[in-house]
Length: 93
Image 1 (cartoon, rainbow, N blue to C red):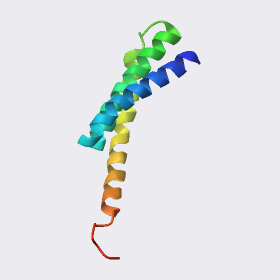
Image 2: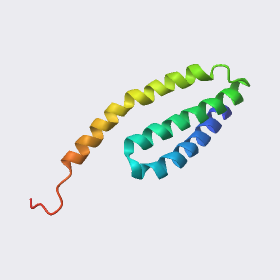
Image 3: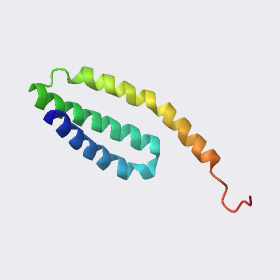
């Protein structure tokens, strides 16, 4: 429980520290980069605290990385729909 909580808190802080400055350069870039950083930090801290070893790190990173990559097209679709559904400034209803 302590390993999971510590890993979550530190990885979320790392995720936010990367996401926030990158957000201005694009949502997909920010999400991808911050997620990769967060998953590395989360995995490293959790495995070290819970098992005292990082032997299983690469399997965890690959599995979590696939989930990030698979989520990006959905995020892109949602972002595109949101942008195209936004009202045009100055248009009358």
